[in-house]
Image (cartoon, rainbow, N blue to C red; front, side, top):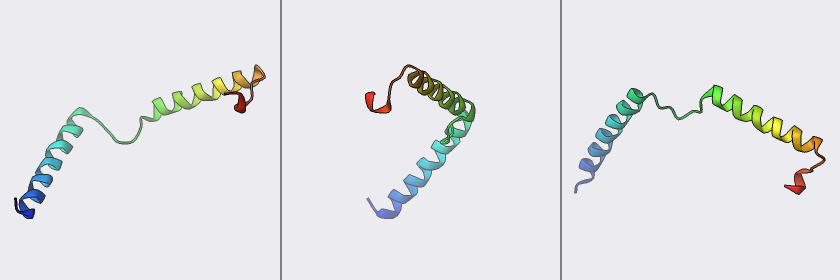
Length: 59
Protein backbone atom coordinates (compact mmCIF):
# COMPACT_ATOMS: atom_id res chain seq x y z
CA UNK A 1 0.00 0.00 0.00
CA UNK A 2 1.28 3.45 -0.76
CA UNK A 3 2.17 5.58 2.23
CA UNK A 4 -0.25 8.37 1.24
CA UNK A 5 -3.14 5.88 1.24
CA UNK A 6 -2.25 4.83 4.80
CA UNK A 7 -2.15 8.47 5.93
CA UNK A 8 -5.54 9.18 4.35
CA UNK A 9 -7.04 6.14 6.09
CA UNK A 10 -5.58 7.24 9.44
CA UNK A 11 -7.07 10.74 9.06
CA UNK A 12 -10.42 9.26 8.09
CA UNK A 13 -10.38 6.92 11.07
CA UNK A 14 -9.39 9.76 13.43
CA UNK A 15 -12.27 11.97 12.23
CA UNK A 16 -14.79 9.15 12.63
CA UNK A 17 -13.58 8.22 16.11
CA UNK A 18 -13.48 11.86 17.21
CA UNK A 19 -17.10 12.39 16.13
CA UNK A 20 -18.14 9.28 18.06
CA UNK A 21 -16.25 10.48 21.13
CA UNK A 22 -18.04 13.83 20.99
CA UNK A 23 -21.41 12.09 20.51
CA UNK A 24 -20.84 9.87 23.54
CA UNK A 25 -19.50 12.75 25.61
CA UNK A 26 -16.22 11.04 26.33
CA UNK A 27 -13.25 13.10 27.41
CA UNK A 28 -9.62 12.38 28.06
CA UNK A 29 -9.48 14.50 31.21
CA UNK A 30 -11.01 13.07 34.38
CA UNK A 31 -14.33 14.29 35.69
CA UNK A 32 -13.61 16.95 38.33
CA UNK A 33 -16.42 15.78 40.61
CA UNK A 34 -15.25 12.15 40.58
CA UNK A 35 -11.64 13.23 41.02
CA UNK A 36 -12.58 15.34 44.06
CA UNK A 37 -14.51 12.40 45.59
CA UNK A 38 -11.54 10.09 45.00
CA UNK A 39 -9.10 12.54 46.63
CA UNK A 40 -11.41 13.09 49.61
CA UNK A 41 -11.87 9.34 50.09
CA UNK A 42 -8.12 8.70 49.96
CA UNK A 43 -7.50 11.57 52.41
CA UNK A 44 -10.12 10.13 54.80
CA UNK A 45 -8.56 6.66 54.58
CA UNK A 46 -5.13 8.12 55.24
CA UNK A 47 -6.39 10.03 58.29
CA UNK A 48 -8.11 6.88 59.64
CA UNK A 49 -4.90 4.89 59.24
CA UNK A 50 -2.97 7.65 60.93
CA UNK A 51 -5.41 7.66 63.88
CA UNK A 52 -5.12 3.88 64.13
CA UNK A 53 -1.37 4.27 64.56
CA UNK A 54 -0.40 2.80 61.22
CA UNK A 55 2.58 4.22 59.41
CA UNK A 56 3.00 4.45 55.62
CA UNK A 57 5.74 1.85 55.89
CA UNK A 58 3.21 -0.63 57.36
CA UNK A 59 1.12 -0.62 54.18
